[in-house]
Image 1 (cartoon, rainbow, N blue to C red):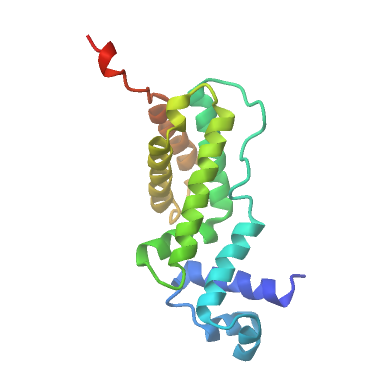
Image 2 (cartoon, rainbow, N blue to C red):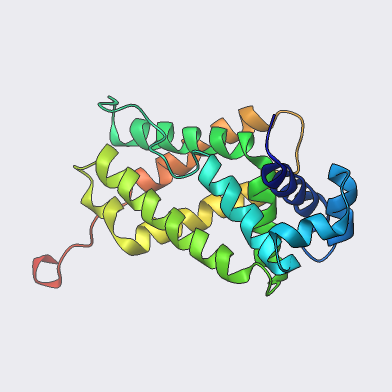
Length: 197
């Protein structure tokens, strides 16, 4: 059975996924776990600290930024990139509450959680770059920071579109992974000016 702090953090994230950080009060969290508000203040001096801790806790407990693919994955650049993106979407689906919170709070720009969201986004972009370099070392065009950032933006767009869909989401995300892989695998380095005829 999880300890009191973990129960508080899990309940907070669940409420934030449903109601946003603005709609998640200390009282609502206390009611969700059956304790009094003073207990929450024992662990967290403010709602801001509680919201930030809930996000950090779930990120630490999840495999959100672990290598989402087996070492030595075979196939074309497109196939390996598709497998990477599909694994990411499977992880995102398993951690739907976390991603709902991250995306919703980024849209609302709530000061209580904005900096942790920006930090998380930077960590995700760094992890994505590392995954691509490790999985597809022979495709340096995909390693460029601008390409990785654009892929991160595309992934966020897919999550916004598909997280709310309860039916058929996994199949749709598998198809999106293939489609994104086809587009990004076609990225070629620009031809230097001197080589242009």
